[in-house]
Amino acid sequence: MFVCNCNAIREIEAGTAIKTGARDWVQVHAHFGHAPCCGKCAPEIMAMISSAEPNSSSETPLPMTMS
Image 1 (cartoon, rainbow, N blue to C red):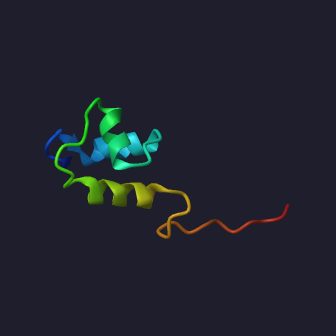
Image 2: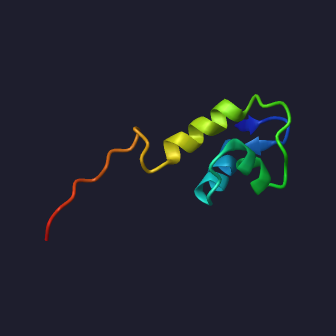
């Protein structure tokens, strides 16, 4: 599925850019050598970034154990 129709960036590709360090929607575009156009993809890409962040509410932290 495309997350950015203007630049033909697919969801899986955006995920790759995020995994390699993109932290905002402009950086996701830059990862592929593009600049954002209309901005309609910004909310979806930012949601992907938020859900990928380690401190995101969607991830449960592992309990600390003492050895």
